[in-house]
Length: 112
Length: 112
Length: 112
Ligand SMILES: Nc1ncnc2c1ncn2[C@@H]1O[C@H](COP(=O)(O)OP(=O)(O)OP(=O)(O)O)[C@@H](O)[C@H]1O
Ligand SMILES: Nc1ncnc2c1ncn2[C@@H]1O[C@H](COP(=O)(O)OP(=O)(O)OP(=O)(O)O)[C@@H](O)[C@H]1O
Ligand SMILES: Nc1ncnc2c1ncn2[C@@H]1O[C@H](COP(=O)(O)OP(=O)(O)OP(=O)(O)O)[C@@H](O)[C@H]1O
Ligand SMILES: [Mg+2]
Ligand SMILES: [Mg+2]
Ligand SMILES: [Mg+2]
Image 1 (cartoon, rainbow over the protein chains, first blue to last red):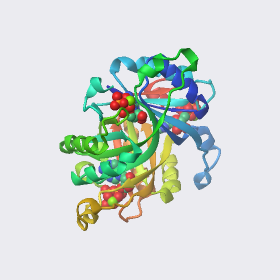
Image 2: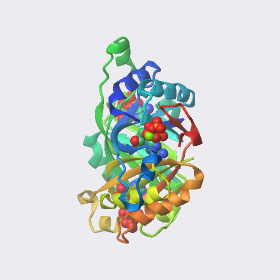
Image 3: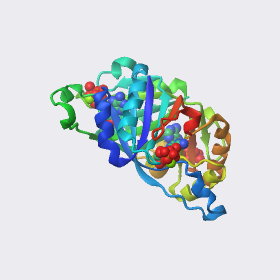
């Protein structure tokens, strides 16, 4: 199992949800975050302590899924989230040892 | 070490905290999230783009612990969070390479 | 690659950002969280159900980076976040299988 974490633009959330549901991913957890994404050029225009980098509002989506769902989940997120402009977001795939459904105590693939 | 992430009902947070403290887990980080949990039946009642799935307010708890604490932590969360109705929540166990206590620089099991 | 998660004092965020930019870490995601950090002594002054533990406002920073950046990132966070008083925060280092830049589809070290 993997835990997929995606940071996307808030205005693309509806499109990303729709793309995820279409490939069968429905379990997900969302939070509002604030992010900065690797704009090193901006940094180099300034010097030392006067650097003030902008942070943008983003949505963080966390989804546990089985290995076989990883690639289609990544594709669905990219399809829903992409505009082509810088700042479209990032996806992180983390190893996941165990999942538990609290209501039943079911574990791992039975709990997804 | 493992990082345990639990998504629970906000109204069960006090019970979960109490159950965690009773087994000796006190270090934890909480955030407010919004979630949807695998209700695929709902999806199939609708078609295409008209699907509107409900998201519910949840609390996300993140706890780093040593391997030997994982099972009792899972049990404590389930005991505190379970109502028996759908939507009780999920627990995810992730591998954790390192922990650092910022004040002292202590690492790993000394930092838990 | 690793995903570094740091929980710090909100009042040290500007110092931590500055320290991170100075070592070249610019991609990061921030959220507001609430935390309790292992103050077991407090627990022992009370009994049973009357325990009320304080939670403090913290900032959670999430940064994906390559292996070679892990130690300097930890050092920068500690340098920016440390006051010497209890509650300075914690750093967690998690294994990270994949990173994707949504705009381009680039993966892993090319996406950092
Ligand atoms: N290395 C990283 N670690 C953690 N979060 C990141 C990282 N890089 C980006 N993010 C998060 O993703 C959001 C979007 O990043 P962004 O799309 O700008 O990435 P990028 O690599 O700069 O790609 P682009 O060149 O398309 O802008 C950021 O605001 C931040 O929240
Ligand atoms: N696969 C998942 N990935 C990430 N978060 C999830 C996942 N499944 C559930 N969650 C989170 O947990 C919350 C509660 O999920 P829920 O208890 O409904 O899970 P479930 O598997 O549908 O179990 P039940 O059948 O008891 O409803 C969701 O609102 C969501 O925040
Ligand atoms: N084991 C843990 N799991 C998850 N989050 C933790 C853990 N320990 C601490 N935290 C988070 O880090 C924040 C700061 O913790 P804190 O600095 O008090 O850690 P500590 O180990 O008690 O160190 P100190 O002795 O310096 O107080 C907490 O409020 C909480 O959000
Ligand atoms: Mg960017
Ligand atoms: Mg459910
Ligand atoms: Mg403490």
